[in-house]
Image 1 (cartoon, rainbow, N blue to C red):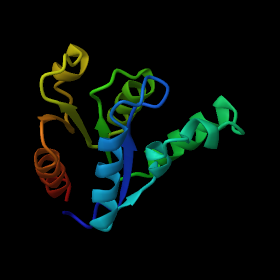
Image 2 (cartoon, helix red, strand yellow):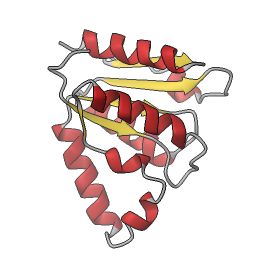
Image 3 (cartoon, helix red, strand yellow):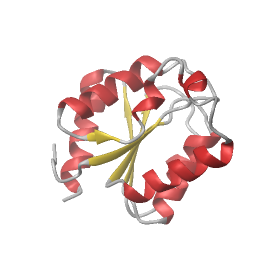
Image 4 (spheres, helix red, strand yellow):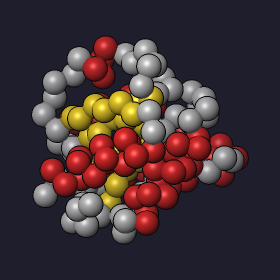
Length: 144
């Protein structure tokens, strides 16, 4: 993995559903083990909503926008539809950040992601951990 891409913004559904939480946790652990800093590590906490209950929506929005500006790239697990994740992906692309969207093979993924030809966007499906690991490695190695 490219150690130069140090700060990663990870996206995963929170309010939209947590059925992919185990995958989110594995992805973040994988990135951290490779020496990357995951700015949004809190997303993989099972009690993330309780952890953030003392913050206003404005505070969370401002914090997350600052992290998007600070990050070197975005990795989003998009198998579960999420307005927040969609917004983060779009915002990141708009400010020129490279984005990798991962999704579970066989699910119906919105055409707004699949049909997006924006420079800097990679969309990859996976069935096994090895497949998303390979996609992450490929994505990060291209971002030198």
